[in-house]
Length: 287
Image 1 (tube, one colour):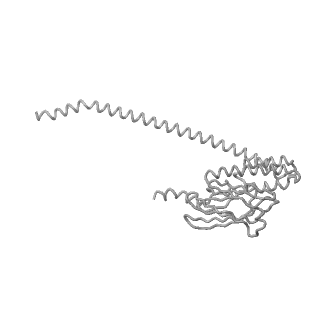
Image 2 (cartoon, helix red, strand yellow; image 1 turned 90 degrees about the horizontal axis):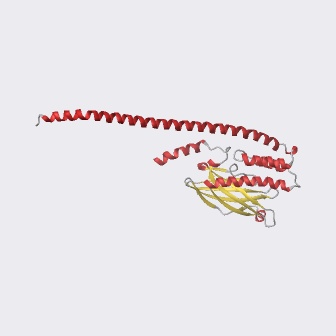
Image 3 (tube, helix red, strand yellow; image 1 turned 135 degrees about the vertical axis):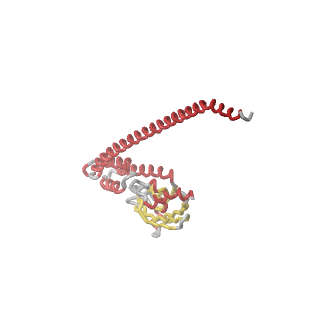
């Protein structure tokens, strides 16, 4: 009986050999088919991505050319308001404001056009100011999505009586784990030009204590994405003039917004050290 055991295993091996070969062939065929399917899907995805990238690149190039031509024609009209009607001058500024407000500092152009508008026809100035207000409102909506804001009201009559200025209530804000106290002091009011001079004091509490103080004027043509104060950790703080009345009970309303530097205008480039700091954040969190 013991002598028959090797023969049994040999016979079993002979019987199973074709089955094993068949299983091997099937496995190779299945793996090959799956590999070809995956490869084809990858090639199809890469082709679609390449076509999409080319289409987007062509679209951006066409848009750039169009915006370049549009910008040149508008600027020609804006810089020669004396040769055009007030309606056309304001229209050109509206086109500039609504299409290029994220990439250009339009404040000098707004002031230039306003100086050349007829003083006797206030409706042109009102229309120009409305265009600026629309841009400010749209920029604030974008900044509020990723930042924080608060509003304050200034008694301009009290400001005119106090040479030291009027201190507004401070506000404590925390953005991206950085805690700051923001104080705003109204120093002067320029009623004819509808603007207010402020001293902005920002004290960082965490993580690294520091204090920054800046003084500046704010009017209707100061746009938060461009006219802002740089802070540590690539954050920005801007003050926006919402309302400036000239009645007997004259008040001014302002909005202070704190937001990441990534939402600033295209001309406000992020410093290289801030970019490096952002790139190192994931590594620091892993450690």
